[in-house]
Picture 1: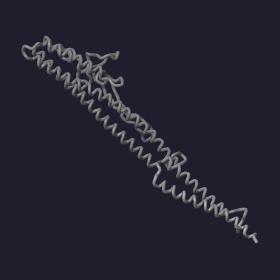
Picture 2: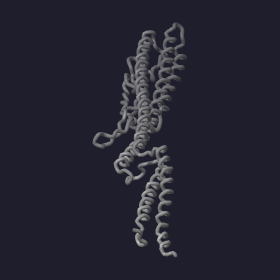
Picture 3: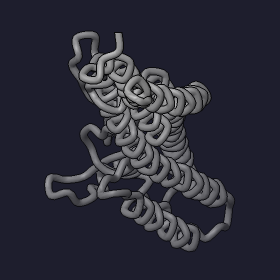
Picture 4: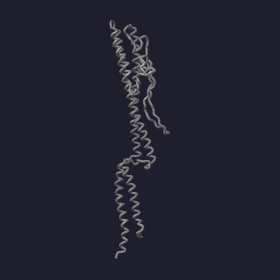
Length: 302
């Protein structure tokens, strides 16, 4: 039955066209944005996971920056400690030279005094971002990781480095209560035996026995400095490894989030072409359905 009041064919064609237009709109949005899950309404579960992981990735980026800052602090300290080893080795060589008969110990002491002043200068200069890891006491720390637990709790992990200002510790000098360098503490400043400390000793009037005792003390200081440099080198290696891990982890999170929410551009492109063709056919079908009602007029023509 043909009705001029109700065109069932046109209604069906219009419904099909409306469905195709909705799909086409979604596909065009996916192609233009690159996402198949751009908003919560697209897929609430995937959108929630992706949003949380993106937030964590931003935190990891901050951790990477903090690791860079920590690496700079440790590298500064290591450079200072390495330089101090060279200076103390030079002092050791001067003391050995002073054991020779007829050598003017006063002149050698003048050279040693300049080296001692340089040790203090190294300790004072080895500061980065307001922190000095070769002069002082207490605990220094650098951010190492951002962790999300199984229950959703988050925390920031740190790597700690305890400054020890004893003669066998890991700093050149300690610090007093006012924050000034204390030249009577640390590997260089702590008095040792009868000759004083590496920083304060004066060999001008030393006998051969005194010089031998001084050499023993300087050698102990060198051993402590080498150990301290080794500790700093180990921390530097750990920071480098952690920084590499954070970078890899960030890439993995990006990849995982992409698997959840990114659009497959090949698939979306094919779908877009197919939907555009379907749209044209649906428009043609609607046109045919609308024109069918006009055929009723032929019944009334002579």
